[in-house]
Image (cartoon, rainbow, N blue to C red; front, side, top):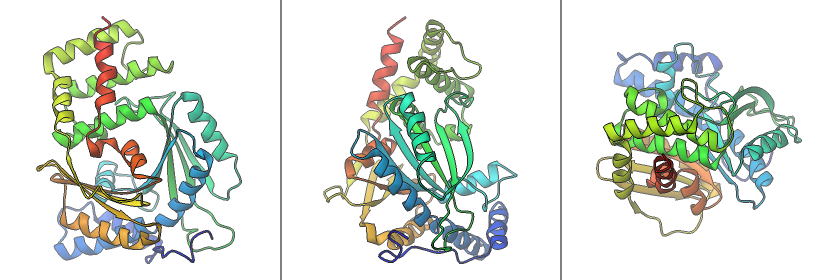
Length: 349
């Protein structure tokens, strides 16, 4: 197995039934501090064990990109997001959660989304295809658009990680990525959790309309419940913005860009990003490819110490620091391109 002997990768330390139990118990708000710590320990181990399967798929995607103008990134799901998803979806099981390990593959066009998804799916690999979610042809009501492909990691040579390890690959265009980034940035400042379907009806409608405008630009289906007329969409967008000034708020956020610490370092492999949402400060901790176990350990410690909504923390891997900013611009409050495109729409009518 590539890299297994040169790098220390976390392995699963608990049984299937214990992992499922942890997912159920963590939903309970009446846990003692000791119980919460124990269940969190199980969840953190299960998540960290996904690092090697995620690494294998990420490197495969990197080879596919091969120097082209494509952003490839990987991330382990944030503990806060894992718990929120378990609570939000009653039937969700920690054992079958499909995005504990996730890759982003960001390309320029719709045709590239499907071409590269097919290229990966038909490539020489042992991973088992599990699910496909086409949120481009069938956008979510929120306006989210992307193609998700889920695989169960499989190795014929070593059985260590053949334990229902599910990895989700998100193929999306640059335009779709800009929209998703703007939603995540708004969430950071308003704490509305719009990405999870929460927030006011007005702000959800605002982003749904923009998503439909982006869809028309890419000649794709609009968001359910929105007009298929560009003129009507722009008129409604202007009405909402004139009343609630969402664009002014986003411009203010963009102007408030977080101060970055510790950014004067050579390109590494893994990065922990720590956002202080109150002090507008971004701290970046870099790690080499051989420090994945250390990175995972520190990641868990930081999540325990720096909790939401005051902090937002994530562990990611990218090819370079520049690619880090491209893959996760919301952590750098880089929504200028999104705002520029939306402003051009506003001025059309």
